[in-house]
Image 1 (cartoon, rainbow, N blue to C red):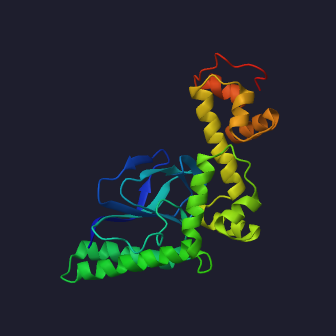
Image 2: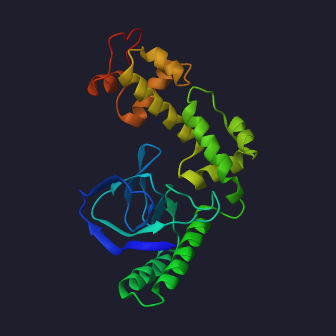
Image 3: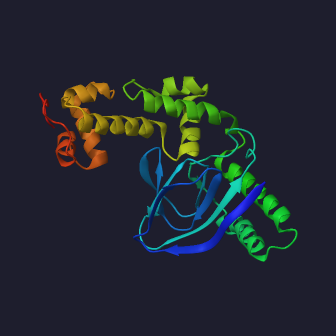
Length: 265
């Protein structure tokens, strides 16, 4: 059974608004953004364009804010005591582009109307409208040709973040998901909104920031533990993402730099 808790259409928030929370047990939320939005995915805030939808399941962290100007979005929070289709059918916690926003939004508005009217048949109608919303979200997220690969791509992404020190290549990643390199790059971007190569760089940057703040390892040692054979390349790539060198990041964020040795840039 799906029970609507809130169904809010055309919600307007000031530019300074920011939401950062975890929903209670059994609570799901689906949001449809009409303006550019920063959304946290995989521990990293990323900017997404207008017409982006995201579905959260209980226990997932929900963190988003405006990407400039007023934030306008629609959201439905609901309880659900049944499995939402088979595993992997819905892209929980993954921002999805909705190419026909105006049509998709009609179903959302119908849910909000039914929830307000509370007709005798409203519960029946709402559940079927929500099923339409879920199926359409699945269509947006997974093209027919790539939907069967979701589990493999999720596993690959987990491996990338667990082992940023590995020398990941397109060929190796393609072999992992049993696809060609071109299909790998296309489908990975479809699933996660980021290229697989940039995902590797992000995983290495995240690991580097952790080591910079929690250890006194040298920049050279950290670069090696993050998969770089050349500390200068590591420093350039780190600065391009964070706007400062590893040493500057360590100093600015109060990291333990006591044993920093060798190069410091």
